[in-house]
Amino acid sequence: MDNRVTETAAVREYDVVIAGGALSGAGTAILLLREQPQLRVLIVEKSAAFTRRVGEATIEISTYFLTHSLGLMQYLNQTQLTKQGLRFWFTNDRVTGLDQCSEIGPGYTVRVPAFLVDRAAMDEEILRRACAMGADLWRPASVQKVELVSGGRQTLMVRHQERIEKVTARWVVDASGVAALLARQEGWWRPNPAHPTTAVWSRWKGVKDWDGLELAKKHPKWAAACYGIRGTATNHLMGDGWWAWLIALKGGDVSVGVVFDQRRVKWPEGGSLGQRLKDFLLQHPAGRELLADAEWIEGDLHWRKNLPYYSTTYAGDGFSLVGDAAAFLDPFYSPGMDWIAFTATCTAELILAQQRGEPLAERLEKHNRDFVRSYERWFRAIYLNKYEYFGEYDLMRLAFLLDLGLYYLGIASQPFRRGAKGLSEPYYSTPPSVPFFHLMRTYNRRFVSIARARRARNCASQSNDGRRFMFKGYTFAASSCWPILKALADWVRIELTEGWRSWFTRAPETSTEARTSAEVVAKPTA
Image 1 (spheres, rainbow, N blue to C red):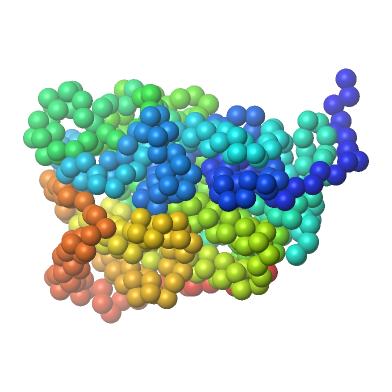
Image 2: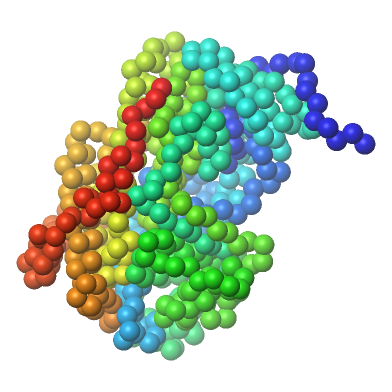
């Protein structure tokens, strides 16, 4: 039998070819076909079936996108778990059990919906819906090469059914994920060396029930302290330079993973990756309680080094990058599907504008400027050196209140108030957001400096035992400003009691790694 790949002479013509059929690709197809059902859309998906992947927790923006833009509310309610916010667990040398860990999390059930999702199942459903709306699907198939022509027809060579098919389209949408097909091919792809993080993860069976009778009988006061549900929150185990997630999935499996800053954590060597992951997590008292009898699922162990990257170009007249094909920052706070919501929405608007005969020059300039600015500011405001104080309960309590509160009032509220138009402006891309960017960058830098000063004085993690902050939750009402104002006052108090020790030391963003961040995003090249 001849297994050689042959090239066909016929040329297939489409209006839009989407490389990648998961959420970002199929979601973009749905947005396009809902507005213009006559569009000829081809989705090229490399896998025969989706496998489980990380990015299993939605937050408010991504939930709006999934439920309102893509119409998945009923599906999510019937097949996935409702997420009960974010929860954080801290430890120090005095902590011997779960009940002694300092805890941050909601005291009641959440007010704005979000979900914990099995991405393989959800992505299949979204792809099925895109095809039902009229998109063609080639699967398994892979885009081998793309020839871009600004303002003209793009040419793709696609490997499909042991043949190389030549396809032309007015638009190519790169939804290829971390493969970043176009960014790598065109030389736009860049690493982010100012944030050297690594992730190790798997799905597990036999994880104890946070809300079950066993732990409630063992720690009755601890169980009674929370009136909500702990088990279906995104639970974070926090350490010096690292954090771990425990995310429950429908059916009983639990997604478990660690992300660490390579400058502060040396990953253990020797033995299987799964055993090293388990041994690492068992050092945390919450990990020992929950994972003592748990086992990772063989064949579902993953490792990825140097997580963050970006593209210097996000769109041109004939192509656009969506989701992880455009950039990736950090999984902390689960912003990945928010990024998909913004990039898919803005990409669909570009294509639909061109189909209506509207000029694109200004739109493309704004699109590239907004996403370059969004990535750079989001990184500097939230993630730059943040792993330095992950192991500090009191600093993370303030960061949690400020980060989440400003996200709620300034970002997450927009689509709920303005509709889908609120997804047309990514994080920190508009002038009104500039003061908030500077505020967030400032307190993040200060918390980093305070954490470093504590380590220098050998007094880190002193508040990591016996503290419990049961938060009532944010809404989109103006009254949600009060927790933000109280957190700002507590920040001032910390500055006056101990922060002054680091007022005259070199700030994090003037250090070598932070200077790299100032150059982390170049201007668009197209």
